[in-house]
Image 1 (cartoon, rainbow, N blue to C red):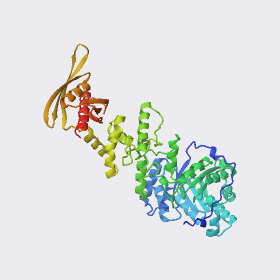
Image 2 (image 1 turned 90 degrees about the vertical axis):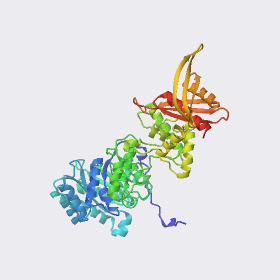
Image 3 (image 1 turned 180 degrees about the horizontal axis):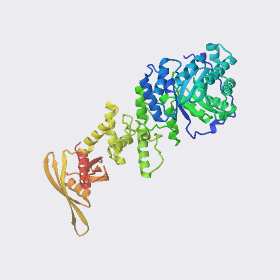
Image 4 (image 1 turned 120 degrees about the vertical axis):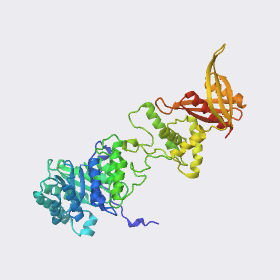
Length: 555
């Protein structure tokens, strides 16, 4: 049995005046990517310089205006990378470079050496403030911890005198989620005052969920409490930096935005220490799905995943939100049927809004249009098979035919597992359109003959029966009726057309038509569909009748 008694419950915040549950996210936050710092340090094989530059270029292409590029005072590799960005003039004028540094004078001095030539920079200082770390890591009291933060701020002010670019200070009380709120406010306010923040010279106060310790609503309470207790709030950009230890990083971020956060730090696809940082793409796509402009160019998730996997040497899990290979794929029969009907309703109603069951967004909006939405296995149903035939090949099977053909595919999937669209089409051809034996339609001549009562249709049909060429004639009130009557007399059968449906397979002068004939064997009560294809609709219909007769009497 799990020894759950080893663990203490993390206290919640007593904050009954909270307002965030009634708020809505209405706009995108300021985004800051930390892929090149937080993300890179979490890799088993950290990126080399050229991989970092490829990732940096991707972040620029996606529209990030704030990018944390590393900890240049911590290692020569980090230092050299920043210098490469500067010397190769890879930083656009509208992009702010962010660097991380501890509150130590020699590290801050080294950081400013690395920043020379950067036009816009954020210097991100931090020190850990949590109850646990004060006790077991630093063995310091609150005043000593606060002094570290204030000293770091003063050193930034000192060394920025020799910096020619624009500079913003960011301060993080690391392990904020394990810090007493009153002390977190006290230390952040001390840094704010030491920096001399004003509405024209804002400071970034970043409140990280360095380790997720409890439910997202508690983090939201902590953010709102800080947000409502800051003095000179208009001089602060309130930032959050959530991690995902409990698997709720996305929820924590969204609730923090409801609670007043202006800015979010995170990584593409959530790469980061332990279970990762918050996945910025998921947060952005969530906004997009609600009709909110995410202010990022994320229209091609396939390209993002390709660069991410190449640079980080990590793989995106198939069920990862939005980015996974299977997230827009339905195997369940009921899901497939609902998707099929939803897509059809969208077309019929010319709906300007995307409303399809089980698909919160149109996959094509993020570059997934070439991947199957519906995939067929033993759990699939009639709607899924019909969807594949329509979406991939343009065959709009009549509703009555859905189950009949789905049963054919079901038997295959039970033996081999997933059935690819190409195999479904091959089976459709062998079961219907290529069902031309033993009676094989060859040619026909249709004429209209006038009698005393009405115009009648005469069908003269040339066909082969087990390879022997034959001809029959039939008269009816139209081509289908005439061929039916001729076949009955010729073959000694009694059949009835229960349903008839046709449609064009493609546009243009060379377009073909598909004809679906639902045919009943009157003597046995058995019924089946036949399918015919031709550029001539009459020939398509006759082929459909022959297909159905072969299925009814010779299968």
